[in-house]
Image (cartoon, rainbow, N blue to C red; front, side):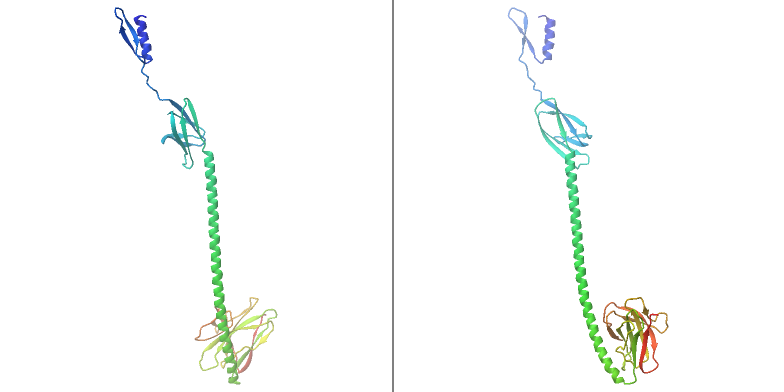
Length: 312
């Protein structure tokens, strides 16, 4: 082999990373003696092809590798060995992770399938919302039921209290009427009494009366209620030595009202819906209190007088 060729061989050999040395043969020309090759290990590697079905950001062994649009892919060189790959949707709500053991070469395809993960999350979120809504409705229903129980209990307490009040008013009324009957008898002929007459043919009425107490107190008393059926008349427990008497009445099933509205000699008096007697200076005992405007009647003589209520 000539020097050119040797040189060429050198370069060829040098290109193959194999070294040579010149050896001198005794009494002869130098000759090429190959050296022992130096082996330089090259790390084995492969190419990952990462695909995302939804737009995602992905990582390789914790290192951000950027964004992959939905349905597209990205590539990355990796060495042999175990690697952790992760992908998260761009809204950071859905995530998948894979561990890959790279052994071969060439391209290795990794699919990040995020849509099923999203579907499961959406179903879970919907179920959670529905559960929260059921719990909210249950709480509201429980609150309504509790409020209803409390309202019913309060109404029951009020009915009981009203019943006690009405009973107390009735007991006082009965005692007062008994006294008034006896007093009427004692007064002899110098007394004014009244007969109430309902001239309505189809409606019952109820009447309240105000008059001066037949004693030396000078007090006035309001008494009610006197119920008269259609075309009925009755004589209430009533007696006074003063000929000024006040009345107020209403139909029990109609809009008829007999009052003192628009009259200068009328008076406003508080009343309650139950039977009652209220003398000046005493509490008005009863329920559903309201104020009525009573009309004035004057009876010019002793004895019994008729107060009529007409529906005409």
